[in-house]
Length: 125
Image (cartoon, rainbow, N blue to C red; front, side):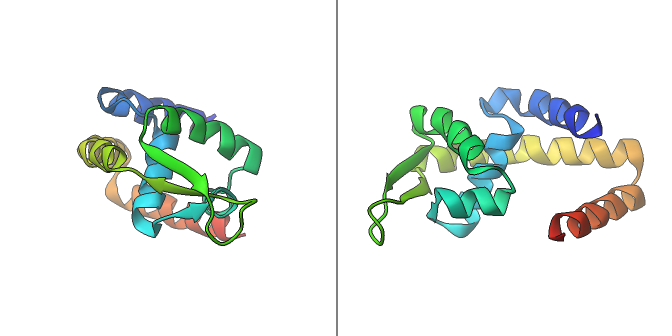
């Protein structure tokens, strides 16, 4: 329930950018890591491979990412952030920071840091 609530809050704040929180995170990982296979991206995001494919379709449709046949393995697809995607991510970043800031103001800095730390530990499991 908490995860859904936070997702709704972040999605509402990110709405002016035209992307949702999950899309923002996918694009941020691609910005940070460069081109990744769909499987690598799904593993990093802890999302099922099939669900990742569904998440990528609207981003590809809107030309925010490119999905191409891998040079290394023709059976694999490589996902990269496009110039347009980089621009949208750059425009969405201040909105993301606003969402982070609102959460911290509402719950306190120490709580926010503790929560991020605990979630990091859970994600490493």
